[in-house]
Image (tube, rainbow over all chains, first blue to last red; front, side, top):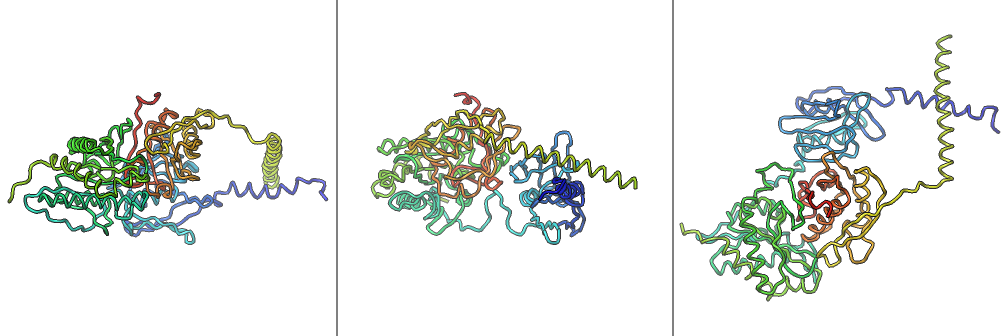
Amino acid sequence: MPGPYPHLRNLFPAFSLILLAVSPASFAETIRATTHAEGQTRTVQVIREGGDIFIPVFACGALLGADTRWDKATNRWEMRGKSAQAQGFLDEPLLTVSGQPFIVRVPPRLINSIPYLSIEALRLLGRHGWDTDVTWEAVTKEIFVRPAQAAAVGLAPRARTIAVPAIPDGARAIALDPGHSRQAGAQGIRGTTEGDMGLRFCTALSATLAALDEAGVILRGEADDLTQAETASLANAIRADIMVSFHGSVFGTAGVAVWYWGMANIGGTGINFAPFEPPGGWVQAAGPAAPRSAALARRIVKALKDAGIPARGPFAAPLAALEGVTCPAVVLDFEGLSTAEGAALVNHAESIEQVTLCVLRPVLAEAGPRPAHQ
Amino acid sequence: MRKIAAVAAVFAVLAGAWFGWKTWNSRRQSLSRVAGPAVVESVPCPVWFPSRDGMDLCEETASRPKTDDPAQKLAGVMEALHRGPATPCSLHLFPEDSSPRAVFLSADGTAYLDYPKSVFERPMGLREEFLFIRALGKTLLRNCPEVKSFVLLVDGAPRDFISSHMPAHGKYLLPASMQKK
């Protein structure tokens, strides 16, 4: 039965809530953070909000050994280290670390007039800019900043030792890229896989080149799991005169689309590409050879059309398969692998031979004269 | 004694404010229950999907919530793309039931489209990836004049390529001259 003042019972939780809300001690706590540089221990005020931990931007900079600035007028914060620079705006999820964009779940924000970053953002800055791992120990309330244990998730090519095949004296080196490892890539009908298909064309072209005393170097064999950056590095290491990369698409009707490296007007769409990497880096190394690559692509399209094989292009795109390749290079994309005609084009010995010849002549023409015997 | 009285008065004022807010809020909620969910006005929104033969794009008219806010408009357009095609002549651009982790429009007109890794884990051929970029670019061009470029991120970070062919380590710049075409 309700009493004379039924709402009075609401007042007690109200008092408790108000007291909790206004008490700074309830959401701010002091934790110990260890810097990675000299193993220094310092104390910083962090804010815990639900499951999120916020650390003052200036403390984050100190932990990473970076100079930190915050412009109150624009809400822009910035950190500068010896090898990295990071910046962003309060209340925006976008951070840039050395020119690369990142999106965080919890944006930086102003709390009690102090700019704060989430532990998620600090981890990201450490990992991608300062080569450090940041860990938060919830039980002991400690933040550890240590040199990164595993390789940073970067965009640069991986470094590992790859055997570079020798090119016979006087032969032109034609790099042949199956595009993917054997069972990887797009899956067409009749068990056609993109990697398997690419290897078949590479093998056919390599054998034909060998018969002409030229060197057709298959960049990855059946068991190789080389990345595209590694195949490009290998093509550069053998000083390839030309590189041909084979790919396949389930999409489309049966035929071959020929692509070369270019960042403008991708595939005729008017869309351009601007890499985060500054000019002069790996990504744009294919640029100087692009005009010759385009000429080679035009020749191959013509040869295919003359042979009655549906051919499309040539198209420009900054394809991953052509990044970093310094010689003229093209991608042949066999489309319509999900159609009977498309599967036949890449599986029948006769059509493989026909395509091989259509590629061979333009490749040798564009490769230039044979090198003199030494 | 005076101190106690002052503290009691402060508590009384705060409690009164809280009680007042609680009463007002419950009344507001009961009113909204009677009125039902707010009706959001929709506007047509042209979207492009890969054609079923995978050679071109098909245009469809979807809908998005009416808004003048560029960021909300971008979110609405991306939602329409995620809903997928309504006609059988087109293919889905994104896996069914997928959604972005975040869609953010920066002050310089760059749309950052952040996806979970699973969205691009499926094997995609070169043409499929090309049509993905083309459909996305064309849809953004026609619906969001504020968007000058777009960036694809996976789990909040840039990566080398979309699936294995088209790059994802940079910005795709939309041609301003095609904005109204």
